[in-house]
Length: 235
Image 1 (cartoon, rainbow, N blue to C red):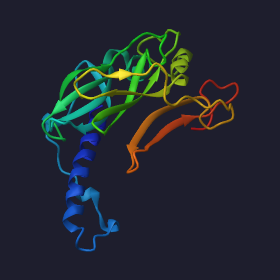
Image 2 (cartoon, rainbow, N blue to C red):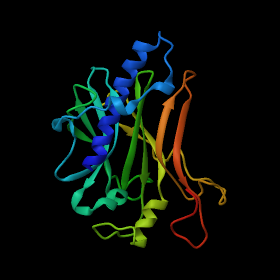
Image 3 (cartoon, helix red, strand yellow):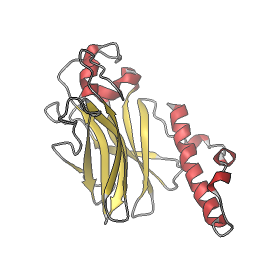
């Protein structure tokens, strides 16, 4: 987990440094081919590593708020449940910092469990946040299921795969990052009705952007069906 968080914070730092470098050299016939990101990597202070003694932390997504603070949406689930418990036990929480690189402090849980009768009632994961016309939109993966998964969770447990195959993509929205978030009772991206489609089994891991026309562009992970195989086919 620390390695993943380290990589995430390095990426944020690199983006900031790269943007500065590009802006300062844009008037000097700058070529992206000459951009050496590896040379820009700097050591990260220990206090800027966001970790928790109780929870595993994953999927950080950072945005600057209207108050000039930086907010990180992240997935978390109890360490005692094991790494693979992200699927039946993850929830999306919020942390805040004065600077994009941190240090971040936990604020609250944004999307908690709300019951297996909801499409996202058991797990919320993979947050991706954007702002458009003063409203924040939080895209995420949600799943549900009725099977019992023994803890610590394992991919060798066939019940685990029910939750994996029920993954769908939804969105929640709010005018305030620390405010109340409203989520929909149906996913915005479901699996294809075509059983032979590349995304007929499950969809997850949303990555989102809003273009200059106000259109939302969504990239996502998918898994196709494979008869007789609970794990599915092509990814």
